[in-house]
Image 1 (cartoon, rainbow, N blue to C red):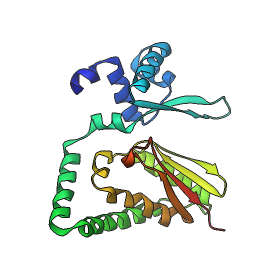
Image 2 (tube, rainbow, N blue to C red):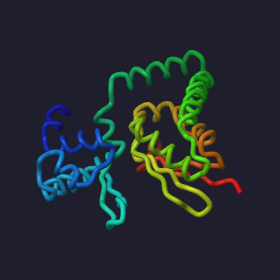
Image 3 (cartoon, rainbow, N blue to C red):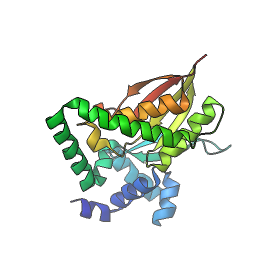
Length: 209
């Protein structure tokens, strides 16, 4: 079924959004050799079916542009065999050694990931650190963005490369929490999660006084 879907125009749009992480109808029309109106008609269907979501993005001084990105449901179309294998391995570890063993695995992963990302974030300002972290996440396949809120920032992750694993093993999320603590600082709280049925993973980061 997936093979037939990806041969269709809607499937090609989904595939392109997976590659680009986000794009406007004009971007997609240029990449796929179709008119913007034809792309918009297909996007309406994809949005109705829960495969894409849209948001307004300002590109320079011009008026905001609508960009589209995949939902967690659409990301499941790209689930790889290694995702299922990882989930099976973690389930076996949990069964044999208990949840604390799974937590210990991700504690080590979080520690190494935080150290690696921190080396790439050199800005002295909190916003500079948030901007740099967002760029790192995007390079890792996360459709991420941030915005200012009262007293700090809000980080949005519109997709999750590990969505199929997180639902069974929420310890995966400990990695981003440690990364935020050790690269941006301040205090943070997760206010929405893809793993629990949300439309995105959202974090509020409060800057220390």
